[in-house]
Length: 193
Image 1 (cartoon, one colour):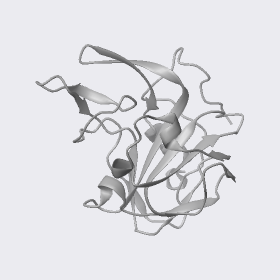
Image 2 (cartoon, helix red, strand yellow):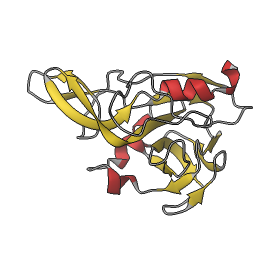
Image 3 (cartoon, one colour):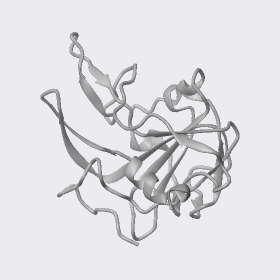
Image 4 (cartoon, one colour):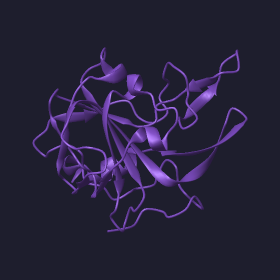
């Protein structure tokens, strides 16, 4: 198994593959929905992607992850072994009204150590902050919590690097840990094999 990059040097934001397991059971029926940097409404936090600047100077928010459209209540699996962390301690200000119920796992696997995955909009969770989880373990069920209430049921997934990556959009330079999760999901997708 190839390892994920260990620094921002030469990091390929749209092409990096972090070795993960697919977050849904092989029996699940799903399709890929909105991807990374799709336009979004709302404030862009310091840790969110932007897609430009509005006339009033505020940042225009972009999507930070990938949505997997899937039936409500589908089991959500840990993409890698690691420890469940509190997102509010890593990303500030954390906005539960946006993400809803989440499970955030920081990898302890040698090939992806320090990388974090955010599994959002869950209807329920089966793990608690501080708990160790194993790759493939059921950690929750898909839902429509947070700002997903008016959307088709989906799992929102973000992968975050253990270092900051330099971004320049609309003449604004920012350092963020987010990058496109779709290459990692496609590489792990059991239906793509």
